[in-house]
Image (tube, rainbow, N blue to C red):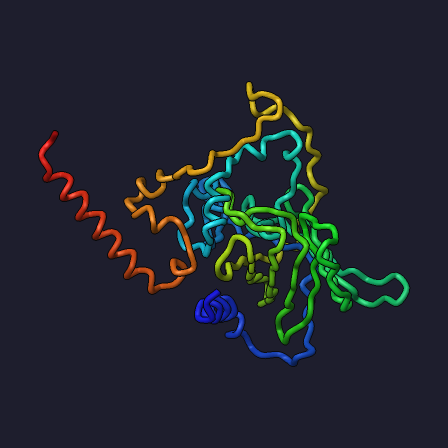
Length: 313
């Protein structure tokens, strides 16, 4: 992994947080309560006001859209083979969103954060986060306990520990199940490490997420989400899932997938992009890639022009 890319990703992720007023190293802040993705009501419809990765909060990004994602070759192959129908299998219909995605999925969570208090010592030992899709709730331990061993159980929520760094809570999560980063199948392996920075500024809570995956990513994957304090919010229990046949006439044991070698070209064709530019990679994350993109577009335009001038055979 490029040192230059590492430095750039970390600087981008923490830049906004570093602009906030400094606080003592031992400072802690309380962000327990109810939090919601900001929304607006327009013409009677409730719409998300989130500006980060809008497609993730609606129908999901298109198949083959890996633009700006630091996928490696194995990550691309895994994503190309993905079929969303896999979530329609009866045994998967009740799956929560994995922790790597739960802050994004379905428009973002209606979140309730509560303190975990030791019943004997009354010490503040953690934070409980409820309200994620299908009950993928999390606990962030603040009592200094170590992460479990390599072969310990992996969960949808993973295992999270937190430490205070000035005006931020830094959370490290490991032991997450194999999941996805976007709803078009961009994968996240069980060896992923997720680092989050929780920063409160008034009635808003920003969560900056940095993912490092040795299996499917060739660089850090960075994103953020902002939640609004909503004391009026009522967070109920997760929905009860009653599995049903959503696959129609498919035979028993059929596994939804795309065969090896599948090329999802529709997204590139729809937006007039070179196919290579939609395949992701660390270099596509950074502004310098605009020059490469312009060269690829000019190349394809010239090729189409030559093809149009060739006599019909």
